Amino acid sequence: MSENNTDMPVEMTVGEILRNARTTGRRKREIATVSKQLCIREEFLQALEDGNYSVIPETVYILGFARNYAMELGLDPDEIVNKLKREMGLIADCDDEDEKDSVAACTVPGNDVVEKRSKKDILSYVYKFIRKNWLWFTVGIVALIAFVVSFVLFVPSVENGVDNKVEVVQLVGKSEPEYSITVRERFGTENSEAASVILQANQESWVKVEDGRGNTVFSRVLVPGDIYYVPSEGQYKATFGNAGGIDIWVNGVLAPKQGDNHVRKSGIVLSAEALMPKETVATETTVE
Image (cartoon, rainbow, N blue to C red; front, side, top):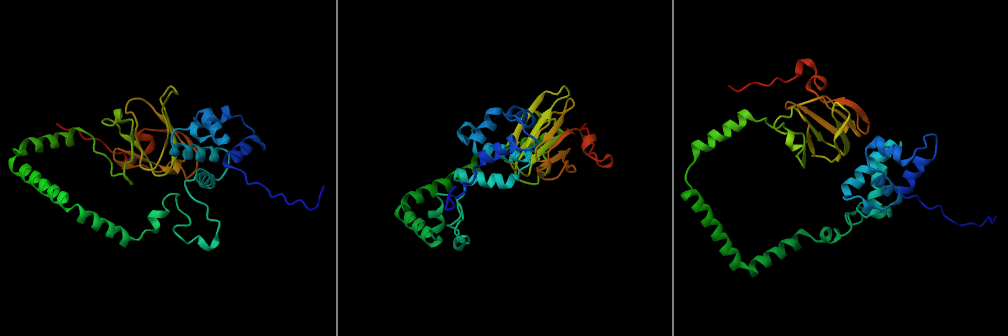
């Protein structure tokens, strides 16, 4: 063997790291086995290992699946997700130590033009555009003022009807909790009127909900802001891929966490009695 071998070791891709973690060591497993444990389709896990991300429909699912796959294999999920983002071109590498503090050096590709353009240039462009098209702006403003005036003066007052209708809705329907973060997307909306238990993600987390017979009624990676209304009738249990990333609201009250960040927790009973301390379980009042 030549002593002057100058070959440099090639850095492994995310797919190679995942495959290596699954197929080596004491816990060698088949993709089918991991797929059942995570409730993620085999072809999606295979796509992650092959780097064929076009198989998975959206970027948020690619990152969510990769995070949960990494946690299941005992890898650092944050490191895997950041490396995957770099491979997909979602963030740029910061190899130059002298440029790490520069906004343009470490940013999403395509945004460098916006970052470099000064606010003064943008305001100047807007001013010139408005000045050039001042007539259309004037007509639009006049039309808007006329619409507002006509709405205020000529729309008949329905004060009593509106007030009564709002009051009925507030009395009959359940009010939404004061969520910790803004709602992004709602799931299980068919259960929203009667649901006493609501799940909301404050971090990316895979969530699976099963009924009393073990049938899966909901399985999805939730991203921060997503909520799921748990059905009110029947017994349901949940599995959280990231227990600390899920807030559980019971009758509008935030329940205690079911686990720490990046900890997988299963068998969580989704009932007010199981989730809340006995003395804090909220009771519903009946409207006569």
